[in-house]
Image (cartoon, rainbow, N blue to C red):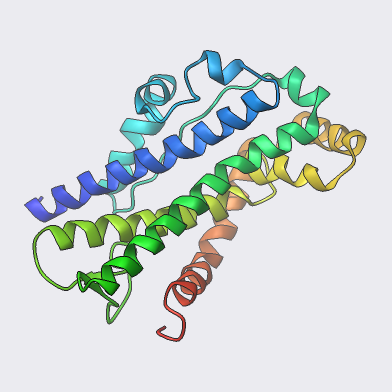
Length: 233
């Protein structure tokens, strides 16, 4: 385990916590606006990572480091924001917007990362890499702090594209499963959510989503690069 591996792991974990806390904090904030104070009382309407870690220590601490140590050395995990199921049944459209708030937060972070990358290129700190990877969406023009910033922004960009698009898949228990009900009438949304809960599709849906997503992520990554650097890749 060389020092560079450790440093990149620390960067990964900082980005993972930031991305996950923003995702769950967005769920909690929109739920509060919609009348469900469950997550607010649990401390999840916050960018402070401690309430999120205390709620899901395994998903926010243990799993990220285990997945980083296993090739291909990507750091993955999870957190959660509680909500009142009775509130969601009464207000399925509000629950849909709550669900969609998480991916929106991830896409916002990816957009901010893209802005930081382009500003770095503009001021001569970064350049477009010859070959892009998960940790090298942009490359430092000089060693030192620019290398740290380039790695941080690269991971921030790609991880939030991954989290945002994966969570939009319309299968339980992902956000897209509830979010898609924003396109339905409230009565239809209630029946759809009740049916999916009664079917107990949570684990099967997650497994199916991961298998499907693994097949399409390379295309999502290339499309994201084409938006970041039009005509370069």
